[in-house]
Amino acid sequence: MGVNCIASGILDDEKVCEAAHEEIIRRYFNYNAAMQLGQADEKTVMRALEIINKAGLSPDDRPVVSAARQAAKDCEQAGRGDDGIYCGAAIKLHDGTIVTGKNSTLMHSAASMILNAAKHLAGLPESQHLLLPEIVESVASFKTGLGTSKRTSLNLNETLIALVVSASRDLYASRALASLTELRNCDVHFSHIPGHGDEAALRHLGCCYTYDPLPPTRNFLA
Image 1 (cartoon, helix red, strand yellow):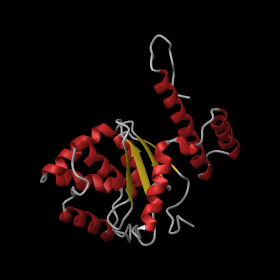
Image 2 (tube, one colour):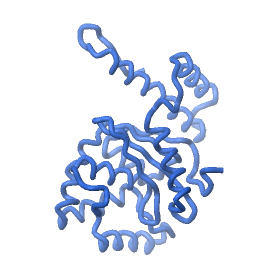
Image 3 (cartoon, one colour):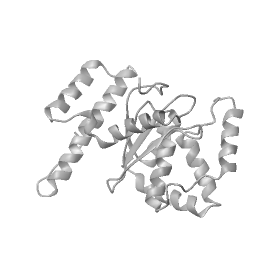
Image 4 (cartoon, one colour):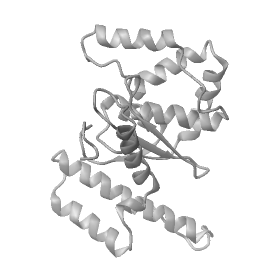
């Protein structure tokens, strides 16, 4: 399953087992998503679920899964989101910390999650703003001005661009930007199907992500 254990080379069996379990669950989500896109059949998904059951696992055993789903529910219960759409995202940092993000009229849940993770890694308070307002406004105006979207909410790729520009003028943004290298190989999960701008940026950051094969919804609690 992508995890090899050589007795003389790997001494921490607990970590090896944890990594193997993560990979089993990750593959289940990947196959399930592929089935929704017509790139895999139901038999493949059921086989992956059978492997999970034989290992005594559940898809919810991946910590970021329940955290992302709860973030989406919290977003809806708080009456936030964007035009009645509520999404959640979660990332597990290398120190074991789970950081979440919720979508808003300002940015996607992926963008919120990564900025929150960057603040944690840079030792910045959660309340610290990283993006200069004029930069966000310029990116959002350019986005809607092209006619490619009616919403100004920034995806992760657009948010990272705004962070790079802000970092040239703001010390806190610069510290957060420098911490992004620590996100490589971190596990991420979404409560929904991420957009292309979110996926492309996550791949660039080197994150290992999965998602529930659901479109962003206006009724997550339904």
